[in-house]
Image (cartoon, rainbow, N blue to C red; front, side, top):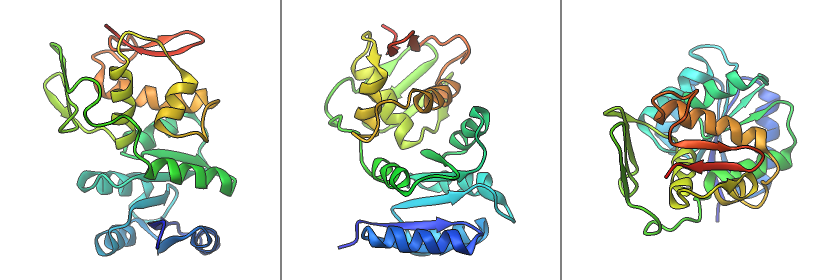
Length: 228
C-alpha cells in the first residue's frame, strides 16, 4: 500500500530523479511536473496527498503556483527554496505553503517534513474550545473558519492546528518544544527559528496589528501564549 501520493514540481531533471528514487523507496507514489502550469494540470489529474514545490521555476513561478493550488485545495504544500531569509520564507507561507525546506537539504530532514505535513495534529476535534469571538477575531474550530476584522482569512492546515493548540491551552505559556512536537511531531523540538516564522505568518493573518500582537503573545525564552 502506498504511503501517500506526492507531486514533485521542479524544473531540474536531476532533482526530480533523486526525489522519485528516494521517496519511491520509502513507499510514496510519485508524480512529476516541470513547471507551475504543468503542476496545476497534474494536480487536477492525480489529486496527490502532498505537493513538493520548487519556488524558482520558469513560467508562472512557484509562489503563484502555490497560491493557485491553495485557492482550491487544502492539500499540504512544502516549498523547496534556495532563499534563506525569514522574509522570503514568510512570503512562501503567505502564499499558502504549509512548510518550507531550504536547499541544500538532507533527505532525512525532508522525509521528516513530509511526515509532519501528512500527519494531523493530535488535538481531538471535540477537545478544547469550539468557537472564539471578539470584536475583531472570530474562529469556528468545527468548520475550520477564521474571520479577522470581519473578513474571511484562509489559514493553512498547520497554521490552523497551531492556532487551535494555543487556544486549547489559552492563558498558559506553551513552550517552544511542546508546540513543535504537538503540531509537527517528535522529529521536532529545537527549531525555535522555524516556529517563529510560522507565528509571524499567523499573526499577519489574525492580528489587527501584527507588530503589536493582541492574541498570540510571546513569552520570552519560553514560547507563546494565547491571551486570556
